[in-house]
Image (cartoon, rainbow, N blue to C red; front, side):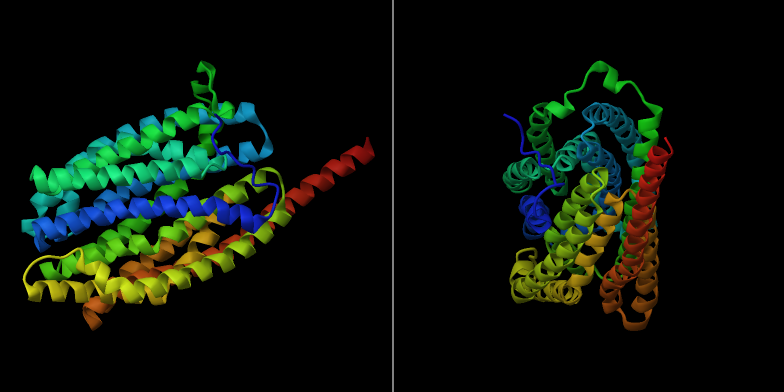
Length: 463
């Protein structure tokens, strides 16, 4: 049975984008579920200090995941373009070379992550009492880097060919595995914070094993031994697309780590509340990253088919859909936020109340500005789908400047609230760059295509 691959070069743009994004939204919902459950089980079972330790480990862990996702997303752009063009031979060769490139990247990343984890925790001014539990979590998490790379490459390849359902099934199963193992490892076996990490690695393994047979069933990705032979031209194209995206995620994570280092100078209660708020930030992003994946695939496939009219109409539709979705999610989270946050925290009544207050203030500020974040993903992903991954990386520089500048300056001027404002300031800075980047890039590729067509026409007339 062939997986649900889909051409996005024909049919209603808004219908294609929404039907592609909806399974990803559900998948992200389940992915966030097991991230939130990690925090809830740790916070409720092990207490506020362990929740704070999880927060101290979040950004070092995210920087690895972000770099893995950057590579796989860059690869997916090339695969989607080959698929949109209908060039199956090039698609198979690109897929084979992507496996080789991803394997090397994951191996190097795993070695570097384990070598640098202790210096990074000290660099972040992690309180001494949090270093040991944070380190125990990260050592386990880093042991699964090759598995994370395999899952992300497989899921990105499926999305590139229009299949967003299989990654959904993988995330549903993985979330259930993670929830069960969280309770088993942390509450029953008493493995502490490392138990939550082992549960996550097991869940990631499950999601990879769901995606693998789906990829193997796709005729267009049935590779021969020759497809794995390094092709400098293809590897160069993959690196050109992926390197800015890896650096983009590295810069975003770097800014987050600087903010975390500032947060680590406050009380343990504040760090715990900040961690709870940050986990709900992931819930706010459930739909926006899905719109992002949908737009990368949609634009890249139509770029391969040279359907610029469909690119314009698709981006316009995605803007309105993203804004409407952001407003609905923000309203729900503002209404239910305190109830959800209370599920993260245990301790004395004073500690619990203070932690919930910190987390909700952070959540509220993000909710009020959520449409800005959703526009960020639409324009960033559309620009990347056009093949320009450099300017979105520049937007990450703008994020870094706004996030770290706001955190370092505002935290001194207005205290804790300055750290909350830093996040939304980064969104505004990135949007300013990304809207201009998209308009510049789409105009550039259209002009290049028109010149190419004109030159071909003149050549035929001259002949």
